[in-house]
Length: 202
Image (spheres, rainbow, N blue to C red):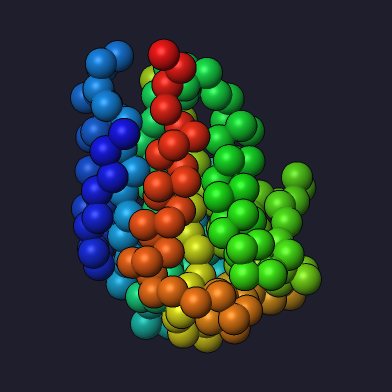
């Protein structure tokens, strides 16, 4: 498993790079986790209802090819893209979703915060507020896109959308929950946790 730390990178070329990686990989290609942040951008899933964008204003809006509805990315949010051969790992899409949720749930539990996933709306929630969003695409048996975890960011742009298509959904972040660590530090912890559990069976 290769972990790539990309810093702050624009959404569109990063998405295109994920597609290219997935299209060009073969059965021997090593899986990768990309750890990064994006400048401010709203993204729409394939089946997203644009009525959930209440007013993008000066923030770009990108139609993408992941699952899910609309979400926001911005500095201070940990984005983790998982480029994994699911067949080789013996995982289904739901398995990967649950693994991504667990990665966050177990990290915050170390600091006394109780978080949970929701079967009807993938992501991680604390007392009904959304802490992390999930959106995946599987092509040729391999995944791309992934997880967005709010660490220490400006949450105001979430008010311009119905996050993940959920009207009135409030969002939260690690800083508000008293969970310490920068985006980079949290990225290392979550990526290491995932890499250990995404290893293909020997």
